[in-house]
Amino acid sequence: MRRLFPIVDWLPSYEGANLRLDIFAALAVWAIVVPESMAYASIAGMPPETGLYAATAPLLAYVIFGTSKRMTVGPSSAAAAVSASTIFPLSEGDPGRFIQLSIMLALLAGVILILGGLLKFGAVAKFLSGPVLTGFLVGVALDIALGQSEKLFGIELEGEGFFTEAWSLITQIPDAHGLTVLVGFGSLAFLWAAHRFFPKLPGALFLVVGAIGITVLLGLEALGLEVAGDIPGGLPQLGLPDIAAGDIALLIPGALAISLVGFGETIAVAQSFGRKHGETVDPDQEMLAIGTSNVAGGLTGAFFGNGSTSRTAAGDSAGQQTQVSGLVVVALLIVTMLVLTPLFHSLPEATLGAIVIHAVWHLISSEEFVRLWRTYRSDSIAAIGTVLGVLVVGVLPGLAIGVAISLAALMGRAISPNTARLAFDEASQLYLDIDEHPDLTPPDGIEIVRFDAPLFFANIDALRDAVEKAAAEPGVHAVVIDARGITDIDTTAHEGLRELRQDLETRGLILEIAQVREFLIPTIEGFDPEATERLFPSVRSAVEHIQTRDDNRHSD
Image 1 (cartoon, rainbow, N blue to C red):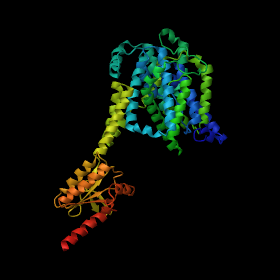
Image 2 (cartoon, rainbow, N blue to C red):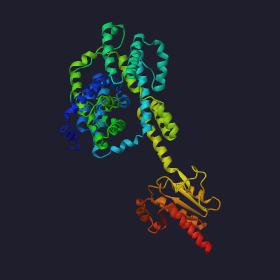
Image 3 (cartoon, rainbow, N blue to C red):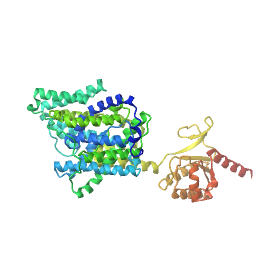
Image 4 (spheres, rainbow, N blue to C red):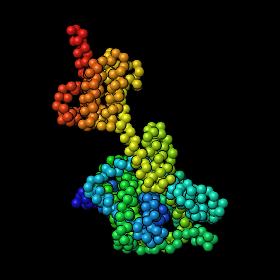
C-alpha cells in the first residue's frame, strides 16, 4: 500500500506548520493553472473547459500516486501539440470526433503508462536524451507560437506545415485586425513586464481579469474583437469516450509517442526539483502516477497532460512543502468550474494567444544550442535535427528523427571509440595520453594503447587498427593494451583479441593486456580458461614483464 499509494505514507504524518505555506503555494499555482489550462486546450484543439478538466482529476490522481512533493500535473504545451497532431489526421474534419479521439488518446496513453510503471519500465525515458528533448521542445514551441499568432493578428493562417504558414502570416500582416493586434501585443507586453519586474506575482491571472474588465467596459466585442464565449460550467461527467473499437488501434502509435514525451517531461521536472530539495523520486512509480492521472483525465473528458515545469516552479517558489498544496489546488479548480466559468465569456482570444506564446517562449533559446555546438557536436546535430524534423515533417516524426540521430551518434561512438597512446609521467606516476602530453615518450620498443569503450563485435576492428598502428612505430617489438576503459566484452571481440595476438606473434611482436576490470575476468575465463594467465594487474607490471624478458634474452 505504501509503495503503490505514497499518500498513505506521508498524509498521516503531515505537519500542521506546513499548511500556511501549502495554501499560499496553491493560490499561486491556481492563478496560473486557470488561464494556462484554457489556453493549452486551444493548442490541443479542445474546448476551453476541457483544459480545466485536464488540470483537476489528473492532479488529484497524482497527489495519491506520485512521489514528488512539489509536482503539479495538468495540461502542457508540448503534450497538447502532440495530441493535436496525432488526432487531426484521424478526425476526418469532425469536431465531435476530434474531441472523443483526444479523450481516448489520454485514456490509452494512461493505460500504457500504468502498465509500464508496474513492469518497472521507468528507465524508458532515457531514450529521450537531453539534446533531443531540447530540440523537440524548441520545435514545438516555435510551431505553437506560430499557430497562436492567428489570435494576435486576427487572421487565419493558410497552407500546411510551419514554413508555408509562416509565409502566410507574413503576407497577411497588412490585413491584420487593428484592435486584435493592440489587445494581443498589449497582453504580451504586460506578461513580459510582469515577469521581468514582478516575477512572483501571477501575471497571467491579473492579465485575464484586466482584459475581461476592459473588454466589457469598452464593449470591444461589438468592435470585432474575438472572445472566448460561453464556457460550460459544472463538474465534468464521468464516462468513456464515444468511439468505435477500431479507432483504438489507430491511436496506439500516437499513444506510445505521447506517453514517452509526457513521461520524459514529467520525470525531468520531478527529478530536478527532487535534487533541489534533497528528495527522492521513484521513476517507476512516477510512470504509474502519470498513467493514473491520464486515466482519471480521460474518464472526465480531458486530453493528455503531464508534469508542468512552470506551475511546479510557481508552487516551489511560493513555498510549497507537500502535495497538500495539490489538494487545495483541486478544491480551487472545482470552485472555478462550479461558479466562475461565466466570468470568462469576455476573455479576448488574443489574450489567450498571448498567454500561450509567453508560456512557450522561454523554451526558444539559442544558448543551449551554442553550448552543445561548443562541447559535443553530435548532440548539437541531434537537437538541430529534431527542431527541423518537428517543423518540416511534424511533431511525432520530428521526435523520431531526433531519437534516430541520437542512436546513430551513439552507435558511431561505440563503433569508433576514443583510443590513446600512453607514456609514463614521473611527476604524477601515471600513464598519460601522449597527444595531451607531447613531452612524454613511451618506453623503448614498447607501445601502450588505451581503449575507452566496451569491446564488442562492431568495434574490435577499431582496437585492431589502433594496435597495428602502434606496432608499426619504428623499433617497436611489444604492445600493451590498457583495458581499464573496457567495461564489457563479447565472444566476437574476445576471439578478435586472440587472433590479433596470434597474428602479432607470427611477426615476432608481443601483445599483452593489462588492467582488465575484475568483473570481466570470469567472462574471459569462460571464453578461454588459459587467457587470464596473460593478464596483468597494471600497465607498469606488463611493461616490466616485457623489459625483464628482453633483458633475459639479451643476457642469453
